[in-house]
Image (cartoon, rainbow, N blue to C red):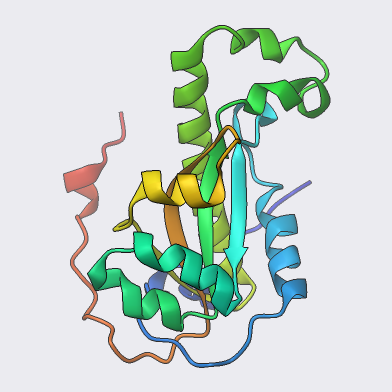
Length: 197
């Protein structure tokens, strides 16, 4: 497959004009769009196709009420107002699925019995997939508000009890109303953050 550069308006939607939103319109995000979002983001690469991300989309008032006690005061209002809040988590036992996900090698043996290696791999690739989630959401016309500022242990107890899943960060999803946004913060110049050797 040959790829070509995306047009400027697409790059603007993904990067240059996209912002982290704090305020939301009441427009609903349909379940079908969340399914499309997952179908898109899951196609991006992870090491050995390990795919450790696990996602919980909180839409209902009851689900948001379960999250509420674990969100910091500064993030609470925008989280409760967002049409959807996603808990981006990763499965520490992702390697149990590698015989299906990566069938051409015994990849499970690379991680089973090596807790530190498995934990680092789950966190790294789950974080990567969380980044893909943000880009896929923007590509599908959604606005995002990714954040930490919550009690991971409390969220894990509330939503992932008796599982091997661990929360990483939250992403509010919906259609931003543009208010409550700070001016765009500075970014490093190329030479301050990168070099070509």
